[in-house]
Length: 185
Image (cartoon, rainbow, N blue to C red; front, top):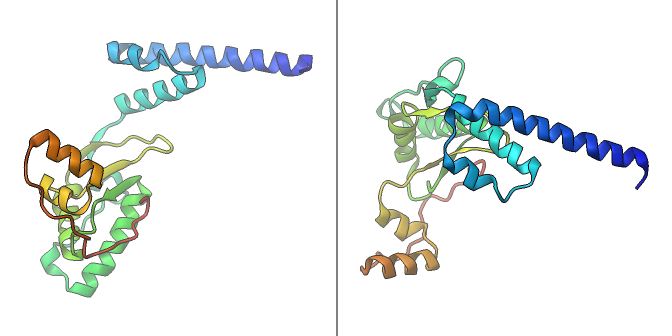
């Protein structure tokens, strides 16, 4: 290693330490013991990324998801659309949601109309923090009950653990009817 490399590493480390101090100062009003216990095992670079994501979360506004878009994303009611119109709008809406880092999970048990209805009724009006952190997404689980999750999405290990923990009969495992390739999945 030559002298220039050593000097560059020193400068990089000093910059990381200064950034760390600035992030900690900015997080001070939001600070609690969970920050300290989480970062004790991280490199300085990882700690700074973690602190920056926490700061972004704390400062992010909570808005209805429909207002994350410009203009706001408004959908026609599900019963106002025919099946082909609805399917087309559903695909476009899923792409729009993904453009704002909103990823839908566990949708394959739902027909297009049911999924569109969940987006229209539950997702778009829901207030969530709009956090713009690279690589982070808001994941929306489209399963409303444990039985559906156990039936269609739980792995054999998850099913066994659930059965052991709750000492109950499980629904049969099934393959969902509506296989989708959604962005982010």
